[in-house]
Image 1 (cartoon, rainbow, N blue to C red):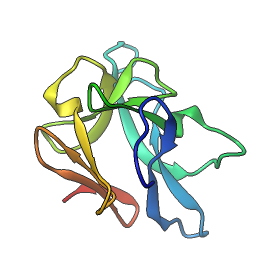
Image 2 (image 1 turned 135 degrees about the horizontal axis):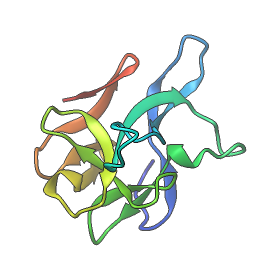
Image 3 (image 1 turned 90 degrees about the horizontal axis):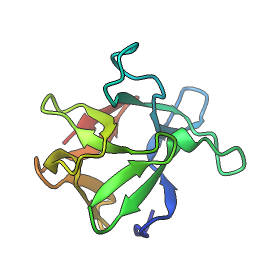
Length: 129
């Protein structure tokens, strides 16, 4: 990704591959973390990228310039959120500081505006830097 365009879907792909050489994409889990309750908390994880030919909306994100947020296409109303435990989740958009990010075009990294932590992938896990 070279730049973010407001309102256009994009993928967050790892520069690492799985053991079979497949690209991995950040994917939102459709199940509420605390089901059967509805809390708006959904885990994110790396999974095999479905590609542009077989679109998986749960692997797509939309940038919102005004809010500095990354909204989930597959989970309408949800936005990427960095928890206080440094885990990345999708949480119902509430305009919280932990839901606001900055994209550095030079390093190609997302940084949480509130915590200052950058999101990256190490091996097959999402880690903060």
